[in-house]
Length: 638
Image (cartoon, rainbow, N blue to C red; front, side, top):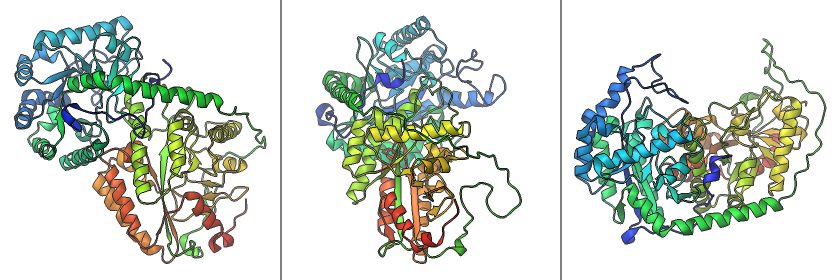
């Protein structure tokens, strides 16, 4: 297996056949309590540490915290669930049935569905050979049958760990679905030899454990996130069925201060007609019987067409690049006037001439949709940027991280494009080489939407760094531009993979004709850089980068929205004195998720309500700045 993408064919939400749920229902609601057993002194783990808070086992605090869920929290959660027409699918560490027969009795009495979550949540699939993994699934199947009489039909692997054989062996064992994937709002065919297997839409966003385990999100955030996601999926389900998943953990949601949040969420759901309260088995069996073949045929057709287009793509002939030596630093700061690097001149706000955009509106508002490919396995020899997020940190195959980002390409980007189109805005899109090459149908949709493109390197897993030689980086830039051009993308601008640069990136970009650069988050206006052809910096706002703020800093959405609106209000006022640029990153896997898309729409609406807001593509802003008096009066030596 070269990549986990070998298991799934791309089929965007914009083109695939609609799904119909039984009885005319529109939205399948899938409630997944994870009932887990963490061992007190687990055997040595492969690939990740089980209890990483303490230098050696046991970790009594964390063990006890999770054990609370089985002793107390589960029973409190059950009291709430009994008041609603839901039938949960328990994600179960199956050894727990041997340890705690009372829980096996509860599952039988309530007739809950069950999918496996492994034997223990402290024993992973990493390090298993094929025979061991095959025996693992047999143990799972036999354990559930022995204790409950149920046939095991699905699995969420323990701690979301996989081997490259996992999907095929799951299918071989007779199971129907694999829930580690979070790449869509509907089941998706997983390609395995001789069998049928589907991915089941699990959730990390609407999941109490990752939101509350040592993170600053509170119960109110969880409630509002679940409501927002439900409302969006419910609205979209008039175009075809969707799945709404909430992942719970009794050691969290069963706490006395959290259980009311579950009740509030279920109250909200129950006020809507057309909801199908389904188990994972129900959803998988209906999909396999009624939609799998059609969906796979559609995805296969798109895949074959993309291969045909790739074969017809012009061959990229390496361009000649300069061989001129260039000083690469480092430049330790000396206590002298000016910067400690050669890329820009010090130009504080009070010394600048007034900037004016064409027309009456003086606050340029430019969201940058960032489309990037995450490779798995990671490419050899490339140092990785630590702030790159999405999903979980796992060894290959990292289904969690890749499928999280894949959601943006399959679903999230189309929500963003719709939001912009409905408001008359054309998108500016930073796109990397692998996305352009691997997703021609998505590229077609972007072109149709009137997108302006800027280059975004080769992939987010191939960043530019000072570990490159000058010639390596020159060739990297040239190859990026040429491969994008072969896909029909001609670009004037550049945004490095997660803002990555070496000490000479601006100079090398300028050598190859790049006119503007969005990596530097240090101003509210464009400015000229100290490069041979006076390349323009188009600063992004780090404080309004969705990955930086919502994922890495883990800020609540209400705080993010409040800061956005306050910044826009202030800049709208300031722009009357001198024009401003509000340029910020929007990633489809983050802001295009159902819990956040309404936030993006509210930000757009607030911006468009302001009297100074102008909404051009980024290249138009650069042209306007170059023509301005400010630019003409502020030239710097190369």
